[in-house]
Length: 329
Image (cartoon, rainbow, N blue to C red; front, side, top):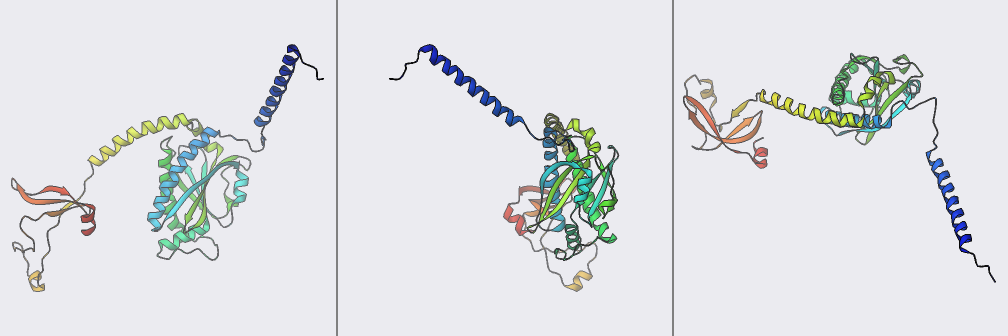
């Protein structure tokens, strides 16, 4: 016959079970918080600051992809892959030779940074801009001086876009300083210095090419205090109202050519040669017909001719439909 436990014995057993579960939970929580820390490569940029960096360079990637697509007249995507903190020597050792390395500097920051694009992509860009099909080169080689001058415009435009992306946080005013093909000759930081490397990929015709930015830590260190999520949100609110007023003021000062297009007519060559001031040319158009109004070489309105005081005028009647805009192009 089994022994019947008293109430005190039951309470004691339950207490022991609760203590055992608490100790197990504590051990599990300790195991979850433990992680490996590499003292040789310390993370000097916080996760919050890295998120802000990703937001900035995401915007840069989208705008730069649009510029490349319009320049090369084909679909180009620029994708942000990762932002890593590595030793400067490790980054330089990972670069191939020959490379397309652009050293950029800033008057407001101490030190220089690096823009590196894949040599294969650089050769495709040159071939495309010179009227070729833009095929991938069979053999990787160094870019010539003439090719460097062609690529220089692409990099300078990339710097303009990058400066605009950073403008929401702080002006960095990067400019192109020099070009190098051998990574061993590029020494912008001590070998052991930590560098923030922004890795992109440029996708062209289902082929991916490397494109990255390298900022030594001492270059971005003065900017870190502005890279919090709160600072980014406040900057976005301030800059949006500023941009709105700036755009409105610029648009109010912008002038565009406005032209009214009459119907055509047919003239014999001898009549065209003998035209002189005061002659009247009869047009093949009905009286009272609506005339297209052209703004910056694009039809936008239809109007009717008239007179205001002593001046000829056009009265806007309506805007064009999408179908009419296609017909009149």
